[in-house]
Length: 117
Image (cartoon, rainbow, N blue to C red; front, side, top):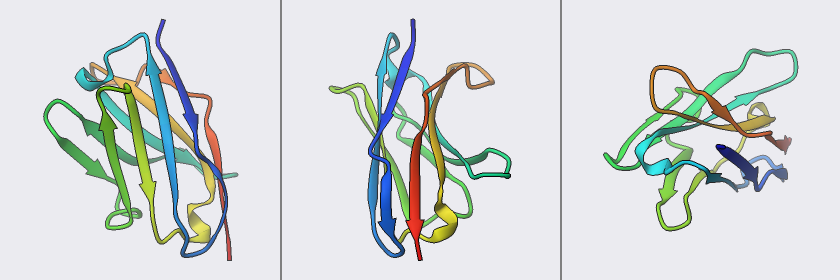
């Protein structure tokens, strides 16, 4: 059974940084696409970043390019999202997700990130 557990969310002032973690169990995450999505109240879920660890391939949403970095630690089976220069519009629940095929089939419970102005 695949389980994704996010942590690291919290309250931060604009311009600050946070690092989110996603611990993966039941799946060798490095062989899968891992991603972060976010959803703000009243808005649709938004793609943030993805990584295929074995190939070193990363992709970012336009709104976070240059500010966020996704990475993976094979030894810990954990994916990270380093978020710098945070803005109030980054406030959302952040979700970790995993896929092997065309759609993300495993999701975490989410972690709240709140950026104050």
